[in-house]
Amino acid sequence: MTDFHHWKFGDPSAVYRYTDTFVVARYETADGKEIAPWSKPNGHWEMKSVEKPRPLYGNLNILAPRKFLLVEGEKCVDHLARLNPN
View 1: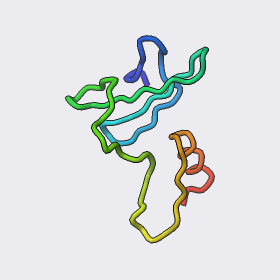
View 2 (view 1 turned 60 degrees about the vertical axis):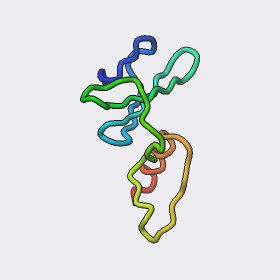
View 3 (view 1 turned 90 degrees about the vertical axis):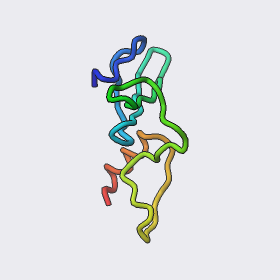
View 4 (view 1 turned 180 degrees about the vertical axis):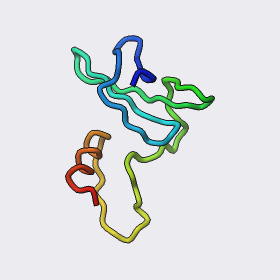
């Protein structure tokens, strides 16, 4: 996780990987959480978001004919995936 070390917040408590070139890092601070987007536009990670429209988080296959649940936040997506991996 040292790739996403923040100069003020330190190492992240979680890294949410959207794609191979875009992640969101979560940092726990004395004041609460801080979130920082990181992208890899030129082969190295930079604290910078990607162009809109940004990708959705999670292993999505929403084109398949089935029901899905939309939640807000990467932490919620990961928790839901652990509860119901299908």
